[in-house]
Length: 323
Image (cartoon, rainbow, N blue to C red):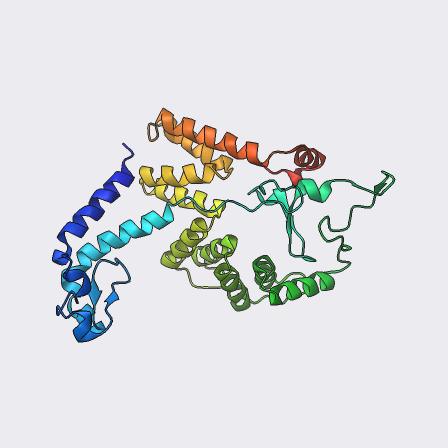
């Protein structure tokens, strides 16, 4: 039932076999005029499918009517290979060296040093040389005192922004969006910051841009752009974006694709996606093996992030719950 990967491979093979008589000679010749690199200079590949080459923009346009169908098929294959590739895992906490939880409550960003630290280490007691517990309000990494005002927080974030800190840039964008923490509401500046953060690899920044285009927050509603940015966020590791893509595909009746998104999200600790797979199994849209695989993946994730310190922090308050 779920043979989507093998289907893509077959499509790719057929495209390669049928597209523009791709012999060894064709690989170094313009697909439209047949000129080789010696005659026309350096050939450039079609940016969408990578299968054919052209000596000029004019030849690419002239050949478009013959090439576009196979090009679209191959481009779709390449896109899905990238979209469904296993995204990168979260980095480790710089103090306990355990994988950081994906859940927002499981970590804190320190504007003083730019470190992302798990809540277990943030809440862990600090002791002096005599073994007495001391004030643990200081940053657990750099031992800086906490900011005393919004102005000091903003100063720290601005310094981190100048250092190219993606999380700081993203946070400043959120302040501009909300008009909070001493910032005047400015959607243009919010988008500018989020784009910059996304370029630096911040997955949530692209997810937030996608949400803005989907809801029309500060920009005109554009579902195509929304999908583009949410997919980019998922590729970079945003669990929220990955889960939302699964919901969209499920609503559209694309159960194979929805299942693939949900399984990836579960591997990064998303219990909502696990519930979705369970529901799909109940209604016959996923197999028992699919659900078992998801359960094992979720358990493996918990094994990688659980610790006594994190559990103690979570027991102290809901705001420290990390799964």
